[in-house]
Each structure stands twice: as structure tokens, then as C-alpha cells.
Image (cartoon, rainbow, N blue to C red; front, side):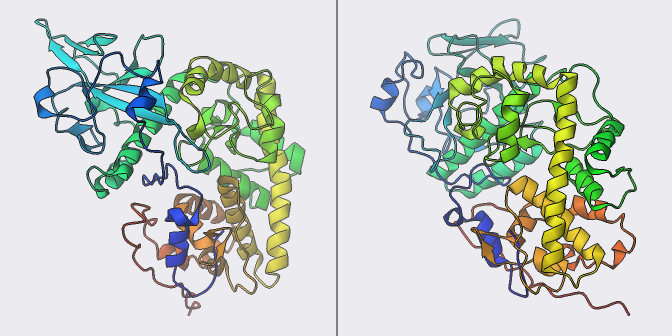
Length: 496
């Protein structure tokens, strides 16, 4: 939630960013990764027969090993930048090896990511025809390629464990520019050799692999005809009795457009393919998602629980007990992720490509809006009967969209005199504040504002609390120093 009057927003920002204020700040937009178990001891590693390499590799890097044999890298010391994956021993290595392993002692209630990427500088051989051959573990893992023509970002090794991948270092993060920049900034802000520096590097690799593997999984999907915007309008009309034309100012239509633009913006007349394929929001506690509102099946959302078995009949783990795939993806072990990206994800996409499933997803969006819109209309009308209809509508649209993405409702402070008072309220509620959520979800709020501008007289709404924030507050290294003080909200002067 987000709150109230003329206090500063400092408390609100800390409520969102500080690890002490939430269970765990895992995989945030700006690279916060609060807690991971310590790395396994030698004894623990030896108890993982698939995980441990057969050769005895050093635990720390030494210059004498450079370019002579496999180097097991210390991510907190040997990597100097996540952008381009540069470092003291890997500058001349065009490819790196990455082994994905389960973290011993992982606890989803206390730790961030169940999988640990272990990175190696391979033995590099440059052959006479220009081909590069890279090997790890006495050639158990090997790859040959022409660096002059190589355009891939990563390749999965043919090893039966399915746990070893090759990164083509200079290109690995080029399609993840925003995440690469923010995680690199957080990585650079931590002391060399620190646990937090290693956690951030591991989280970055985890997220990048999930992103790229999802893209491969969704190539060519959904099959068949992709619904048009007119099809969604028909579902909304049937369920709500409103024709949500592009110029409609009905609350339900404003809310529908805001959610759609924020979750999966439509390319032209066709609805986004993301509405009918399996998704992964990557950050924080995201799970498998799909649909117009990107329903998260890794959450406790009641609609997700109801629809899981309908959308994915017979798919392993998609049950109401919260097991298998119905968990945040950051908690999946290596074999669960591999099974999803190699087999079960394709099965799920096939279900989502059926014509009746596409219709079900659009109808479910309409039914969700029917209940959610009436709920927000009632809440705002009850809390602020003296506000203008436009002000109540604007707050309801923003509140509904933020609740959709966060799972929590804004706090409607008694006596708030305007929408800006509510959106900038720093009062904590359930360890969050309205101001903190708005700062963190500023892009979504600005999208809502553009949709709300269709209202007649919308130009009279007071947005000064948002205009004062040129950019969202960065969530980098919250433990090192407090964020700068923000100017308290002051209502705009009346016109004239």
C-alpha cells in the first residue's frame, strides 16, 4: 500500500527496499538479493555426484593457472563487471562454462534462489583454422566454434546431466540491457569478495538463463489464430455489459486497458502473444504466468488456483497444493527447471494455443474485472464520497492495477483530501506503504495516468506528487546508506 499526508517518503522507500522490512528482497529491478545460504563445503560438494566435477579443481583462482587449465571462478573477486562478463582471468576467454547446481540448505522462506551457477574459465585451444575449442573437466564438457561467426548467447552442453551451459561472454547480456545495467550497478556497489557481491552475480546469471530459455520455449507460440482486440471487447461486453471501445471512459474499460498495457502491450490489432503463452516475470516471487492480466500461478491468487487445473490439465505439478510448478520459479531446483524448459513448458504452450483456451483466458479477464472493479468502486466511494467522480475513478484504476501486480491493496487513509494524498502516503501497512509501491511501480502508474487522461476534465486532476519524482527511487544497496530525502507532498495551488 501507499500513504498519506505531508510526511517525507523516506520511511516508505525503506519499507520497500530494506531487507528488514520484508521477508526477503529477492531479484528486484535494481539487483537486490538479500540472503543466500553459504556455499557448500568440500564435503557437501563431494556428496553431489552429478554436481561435482571428477577432476579436483581449485577453490580459488591463482595467476599460475591462467589459460593453462580449467579455472573455477570466484564471482565475488574474479569477475569485475557483469556487463560483458569481464574479469582478471577471463578477459581473453570468448566463452565461459556455467554449471547449475542446487544450493544445499536452501530455505524458500529465508533465501532467494535455489540454484547456484558455478562459473569456469575453460581450457582454451585455438586451432589453426581459427576454430576455438573450450573444455572443462578433462573434456567431459566441450565446445568448438568459430568466434568470427558465432552469434549465439549461450549453448547447453550435451552432457546427460543437462546442468552445464556455455556462455558466449561478450553477447550474453545484450538482450537484457536493463537488468544487466541494474544488476551490474548493484554488483559494483558491494565490496570485492563479499557474499552479497557473489549473490548478485549468481542471481543475474539465474535470471538471464531463465529469460533466454523462456524465449526459446515460446518461439512460434501460440499456434493458430491469435485473438484480436475485438475478441477481447466481445468478452468484456458479454461479462460486463460495456463495449470497451478505445475511447470508452467506463471505469471497467479504463482498468482493462491499463492492465493490458502494463502486462503485455498489444502490437496493433492483435492481442499480445504473451497473453497465450507461458510467461515468467523474472523478478521477486514470480511464477509461471499467462493471460491478459498475466495471472501468476506461483502465487496464492484464488483465480490462479481455480484455473491451474483447467488451463494445464494433467501437467505435472500444476495442482492446488502449491507443489511442482505452482511455486515461485526462484524456488525450483535444477531438475524442475530443466524439465519445464525441455518438456513440460511445451506441453503447457500447446494447451494455451487451443482456441477454447484462448477464449477462456479472455473470458477470465472479463470475470476478474467484473468483481475487482465493483470492489474498488465501492471502496473509493465509501472512503471519499466528497471527491469528484474523476478523482475517484483515477484512484480506483491505479489501485486496481497495483493490487493486480503486487497482490495487496492500497491503504485508503481516512480523511485524505485527494488522490495524491493517498498515492504519496508513507504510512506502513503490512510492511509496505503506498508511497513505496508507487515509487517502485512508477512506470505502471504513468501508464494508468495516460489511460485516465481520456476522462473529460482529467486535466484538472492533481498529479504533482508524481511529477515531483522524475525517476523511480533506485533500490541499490539499501543496507549501505539510506536513500536521499524526498520533498514532502504539497497540494498544488488551485488554478488562478
